[in-house]
Image (cartoon, rainbow, N blue to C red; front, top):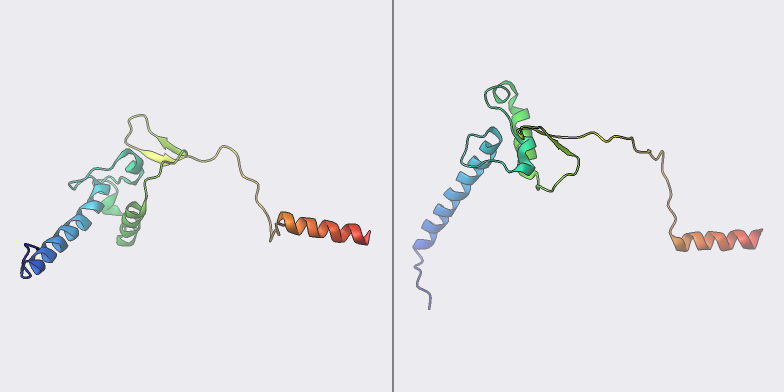
Length: 124
């Protein structure tokens, strides 16, 4: 038998909703280092100096930075370069370029290759 009361459910839902809304407000504040949360090492490249940079960027750019931060899954990137003092992390550039593939390239499966080979050997 359950011990909860039906009238307590709306109160619980409202309390839970308030907690979720509070969390939604606090997470973006971590970008500016002003909220209850601090960024971990894997997210430090999202940090924005509130005194210098945040006040000067447009509202759309702010939303873009917040969205990029919130959708970052935190996977380690071997291409990240961290400054000596640890306050800045940026994505490093590759040391050598990659060869680009031009146009539509048809890649044959092994079975397709074998069929072409058989057809070619029959004709020739």
